Length: 280
Image: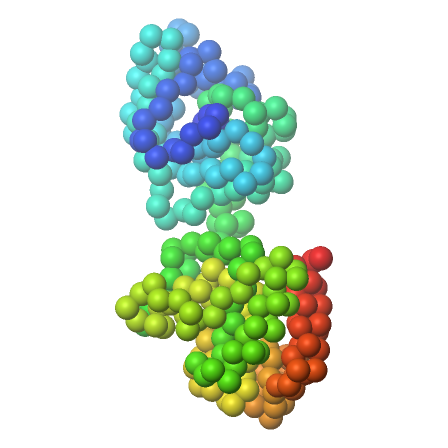
C-alpha cells in the first residue's frame, strides 16, 4: 500500500502540511479505509507506516515526490503531518502518473484536481523500479547533476578553439535559430574554474549537440563521446570525411565546404536534420 496526498499549488519543501479530515480516504476503497479506523477514529500511526506519493494538482509537468510521513496528529478539523522526501527517488512528472493512472489505482481524472489523502493498495516501489530510471553513476573527472535537466531550446557546438571555425559556428547558430534553438559554443562560457566542467555542463543541458570532427581534434572526439554517453542527440559534421573516427563512421554525418556556398548549404542540411530530431 501507499499513501497519496494531493494538494493545490505547493512546493513540497516545507516538511509540514495539513489535510482536512473530511478529505482523508477520498478515492480510497472502503475495505482499505476500514483498516485505519477504529470506532470512527483514525489510526494515524498505522497509516503513516506506508510510503507516500506527494503530488500537486495537475496532469502535465507538475512534479510529484516519493517520501515518508514521519508524524501525524489531529488538530481541530485537520490532520497536521510532517514528512521527508526520499532523495534516492527522482521527482515524477504528473504526466507520467496520469499516463499510468490505472497502475496507481487512480481511475478518476477528477482525482488529479482535488485536495485529498487517499490510500492505494498498490506496491509503489515496484512501479518505480519498472518505470523510473535509476540514479546514474557519477563520474570522477567532472560533475553532473543527479538528474537530467535538459533545456529544450538549447543546442551546443563542439569544435576546435580556433578562429578559423568562427564562420562555421555562425552557420550552426543560424540553422539553430531557424528551428527555434539557441546555440552556445563551449569556449564562449566561463562558469567553472575547469573548462572541462563548462563543456560537460553545456552538453548535459543541450537538446542537440553538434560535433565538428574537422582536423581530428581530440577534444571534439572526447566531447562527442560524452554526448553519446549522456544520451544526447548528436549531429556530426566535417570538412573532410577522412576525419571521422573509425568508431563513428557508421553514423550519418554532414560533409560541408568552408566557403560561402558550402556554409549556406550546411545551414540548409543542418536545419533539416534538427527539424527531424525535434519532430517539426
